[in-house]
Image (tube, rainbow over all chains, first blue to last red; front, side, top):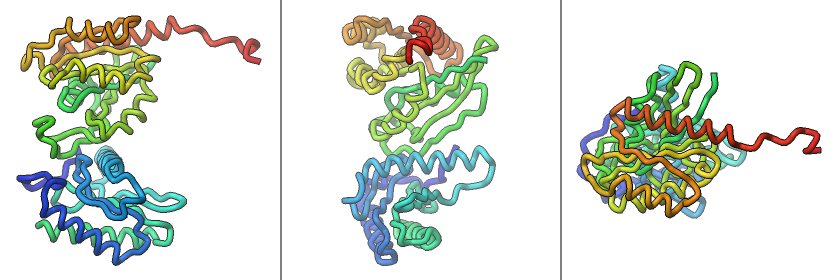
Length: 139
Length: 191
């Protein structure tokens, strides 16, 4: 099992105007920190896109579904190997890297695609800042 | 020891995860997330990547049990996992709207697996809704695939014995199909 303890929500995040507004602000601020951010999405744990940035680069709905699966599989691996909680996922490829992590305390995942002009370390740092910012905005 | 890979598919809420948990001899690997789509299925969590379990039957055959998410938006997982499987256990919840059409739709989504492997249908939640009947499903399947006999059972995914009956039927069908498959051509004929 790999469920993040979630607060009781009255409305799903992808339908919640407060979460959508907070998501848009978070991703816009993220873009200000990294021009190499090619695509970013905030999604529910079960794969519904809340918001995305730079949508011309990817099919947001499909990206959200795949990110949800990848997150869950990574959590399952960490659980199976008994190595603690999965903190983040990195997919490093020739032309870019995907970094994704949870928004603490909420069933929400941040997934971001950076081009290779960004180092993995800086990309991860920016993604962590953005996830914290989202958590603050919807607290 | 021989091995089979079997896929559990069907709509969200049809009982795939429960069925694998009923059957598996190992701790099931699950990828569940909080379900935000309570209109489609009123349950706390939903599978977003896969379920995985294992069972040994007749002491010499291991069956690897893979469950896929029910929602169409996860259909990339369907393709990934269907490629490894030789058998499809398709669960359909009888309380779903237009469940006969839904069954045919899911079967069509897995037509490649259907064409090269074996399929068994399990109708769940027939205690919640007593119609359509097994005969209704069978008639629709015969109309859709007149040259193939697809077994249909009612089943409670929580009941290990009932699930085992479905699984054994499926494994027998897979093995029969493999036996009847034409033998590969000798190397000399390929040159």
